[in-house]
Amino acid sequence: MTFFESHLSCQGKKYYTFLNKSKTLFLPRVITMVMTKSEKKEKVEDLAKLLNSNSTVAIVDLAKIPAAVQLKIKTDLNDILTMRMSRKTILKMALKNSNKYNESFANKFTGSCALIFSNENPFKLFKMLKSSTVKSSAKEGQTAPCDIIIPKGPTPIAPGPAISTFQKAGLKTKVEAGKIAVITEKAVVKQGEIISNDVVAVLNLLGIKPIEISLGIGFALEDGIIYGTDALDIDIDAIVSNLTKSTQQAINLCIEIDYPTKLAINFMIQKAFIKARNLAVEADITEKEFIGEVLAKAVRSAKALETATGQVE
Image 1: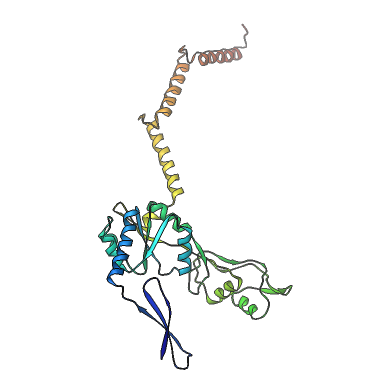
Image 2: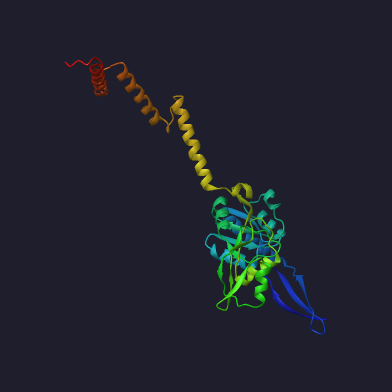
């Protein structure tokens, strides 16, 4: 059996393809290269510099993120963040040699993780990464993130074996102008359901990519504080709405119990003025500010009396 070197990855792994004598069997094998001491030192120093020069460092799990998707997201957010992949031991050494060493954070380096360095705060960084999505083809066994609908109408697919592919996915079709047309719109899979191989086949045939992939932060470190996904994944609009509602309720309480605060004082003065005006009018107090309303009340009373007695002065 012989082999030839196919390519060298950026993670220090050589990939070899082994062939048997008949050259019909291909057996992939990964051989991990050992880094030299100088290479390790250089890698650690590079990571330590990034840790020292950025306010936020975050751990992302790359286990289920295709390389093409990683590259696109890194390119799109190149001005905001820097991402580095390395072995866990190297990452821990770099963290220990930086000004951000945190043992609890270092212990969270698990699986196929990478570090993201940025000067954005963790919450904004999480939101940017979450919104920076890439469309990907569906795979058998995945859970549908939403209802996947095949619309009614013509397709660019020529009739033939493809008709069977449509039928297996439960789609009714006909041939129209030499192309396959979908007769009735159909949700081939609903949100939360498992995507079958038949559905994957028709989606690939139509070029539909229903899966949105983004880099998710597992943990972030800023100013010695570790933030998990639950803390970072917040709804800004909902928080603003709740704060606005709570502020208004607090102001209403201050007004009700006559407790002066900066936000409530103007409303309290208005409330006091209205009470004073009503009292002056009710008691016929001819105060300068209320004399007009007191006289208006007197006129109304006179007219009412005139109507009741039927007399004209």
